[in-house]
Amino acid sequence: MTTMPFGKYRGEEIEAIPTSSLRWLAGLDLRRDHAREVVSARLRVVSKRNHPDVGGSHGALVRLTHVAEWLETVVGIGSAS
Image (cartoon, rainbow, N blue to C red):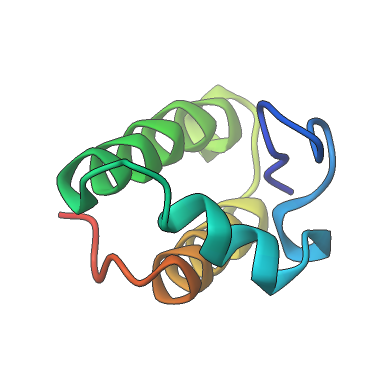
């Protein structure tokens, strides 16, 4: 699972972080482009670690993608492409 890399919830799984905290984070003086960039970059890093070609599993990669999509929806940044 993906964990929060910083702040009060550092090390906790993204799914366990209160929605209100994720919305607060999204409302900081960050532009949506930067938020999208952060989510996309983190997804790439974690995806590479969990990819089946490097010893990860297909299931882990699918779960990671679902978490990233959920986070994008909660934070309100749309699809990270």
